[in-house]
Amino acid sequence: MDNFIVTLLFMAIIGAAIGGVTNHLAIKMLFRPHNAIYIKNWRVPFTPGLIPKRRDELAKQLGLTVVNYLLTPETFRKKFFSKDIQEKVEQFVQTKVEETIFTNDKTIQDWLNLAGFAHMPATIEQKVEAIVEGQFASVKNTLSTKSIRALLSADIQDTIDAKIPVAVRHILEKGEDYFLSPEGEMTIKAMIDDFLSSKGSLGGMINMFLGDSSSLVGKVQRELVKFLQAPGTSTLLTKIFTQEWEKLKDRPAIDFLQDIQFDPILSKLQTYVKEQLAVAERLNHPISYYWPEGNEWMKNSVIPQVIEKAFGKAEEKLEDVLKRLNLQEVVREQVDSFPVEKLEELVLGISKREFKMITVLGAVLGGLIGIVQGLIVYFI
Image (tube, rainbow, N blue to C red; front, top):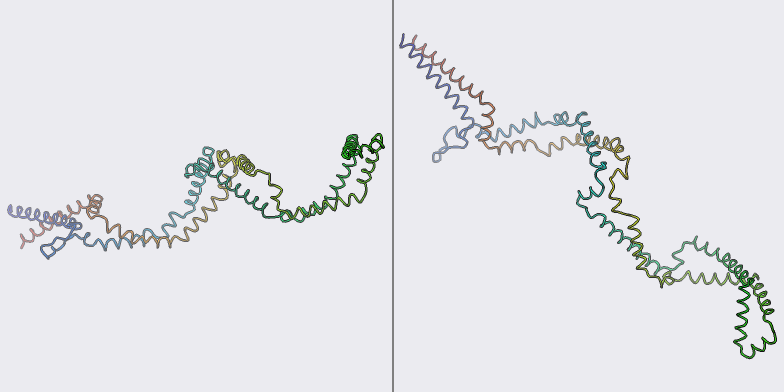
């Protein structure tokens, strides 16, 4: 009886050892050896381990599993295109727009500095100077090459033509008023005296004959007034002015600007434009200074529409994007390139307790099998 118990315990221990070692070895053989072992040209069986040997197939199957069951278009729609996500994105964008774009803490120049355009005011002023200079040169060229007739529109020419008779009447009226004034009388008397003195002795004889020149001044004055009041005088002056005006219209405008210094005008014009623009001062204000209602408009109109359209377009293109991403191939490449050592460490780290239980279970089953075998041998 004692021998039977010893034998039974011995077979139970041997069975437990065989079962535990076998299960432990089977678990190890999932990953080890990592590479095939060769004796000359003969590859040792069961090398490499199961997972290293079938890694390509495992990577392919994992890729198919991920694409077909995990990262499907429907999964993305549920996770990323729900109404809740859309509202959160909209709220996030609204907050960021308000905190960044329409904040009073940053001026337009600050944004330009962040974008790498710190010298924008000077650049704009240089561009303005160049534009003004170009426009000024264009005006000078136009004045040099085109006549007054070509520069003035037909309406302006008709207006000037109609003003010539009015100008003539005004000149005649002012001339009449002048010659009837004491100043005009003095002018007439001086002109008569100068005329007589220029004629030498003949002029002296006429002056002696006439005596006092006052009567002659009065006569000349009356005749001048009659001449100025005569209709023919107005007609004559109107005709002369009209003819001269027609001649002037055919001359280049630059002919009347020969004595003008254009360079100082250009410099002053550029300075004036830059002062009026005040680029640096205008850029030293936040966006909300020029657009106070911009924040509300963006929040209530632009952002909701943009987010809604963006989500709609993204959802429409989702399947096409997933096809282009080729997630199956990405997963396969990643699994295929993942070191077996790390994979083994990862799996064993997660399932360490389970693997120990499998080893213990193997030992228990081996021990039970040993006991059963011992009983069979004893009774036979």
